[in-house]
Length: 249
Image 1 (cartoon, rainbow, N blue to C red):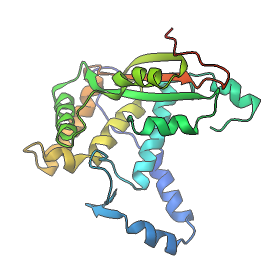
Image 2 (tube, one colour):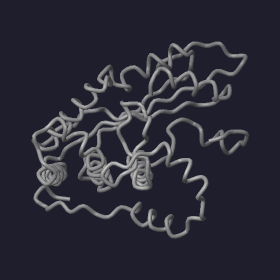
Image 3 (cartoon, rainbow, N blue to C red):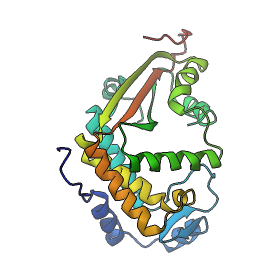
Image 4 (spheres, one colour):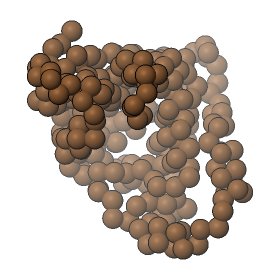
C-alpha cells in the first residue's frame, strides 16, 4: 500500500458476525433483564454501569467484534497463537487453554509447569502524523485524568514475572507498520470511534470535526508509515520440585 494511496476503511468481519448473532440468538429474556441492570446506554453503545473508571471501552456486540479483530491482528503479526511452547504441551493433553492485582490470580489458576503469556502494546506511535499524534496525546490525558497514567504495563511485567518466581522468562518485540496490516488500521479507527465522547472531553472539537480528524488520522497511518510496538512476555510456573528463580535469556 503506497504512501499516496487514499485510505478507505474496509468492513471488518465483526459487522457480519454481529448481525448473525442477533438473527440466531435464542430468547433469553430473564438473563438479558439481569444483565441490563449493569449496563448503561451511552449514545447507542452499551457500557458497564459500575465499571472501574480506568476501563473505557464498551460492553456490547460491537466491542466483542473489535476484540475478535484484534485477535486477527495478533495472528498477522506473530503468525502464531503463542510464542511460549504451549502448543507442544497442549498436544500432550492435560492443559487448558494488567495490573499487579490481577497477576497473582493468573498465577493461582496456572498449573505447575504451565506457561503464562501476556501481550502488551506500547502506548506510543512511531513516525505518527499530526492527527494521529493528537489523538494519542488526548488519550493519554484521559488515562491521566482517571488515574491510569502510571508506568506502562510492558515496563513492569518483567519485574512481576521475576517477583513471582516464574522461570524461563522470554520477551519478543515487534515493530509493525500499519500500512502492512489493514486490520490494524481498522482497529485504530474502531477503538477511537468507541472512545469518541471520552476523548472529545479533552478537546474543543465537535462530533463532525472529531470524525473527520479520525478519518484523516487513519490516512496518516499509511502516508507517514506509522509504526506501533507490541511485545509478548512469557514464562513458566515452576514444577513443584523446581525452585529455580527467573532466568533472563
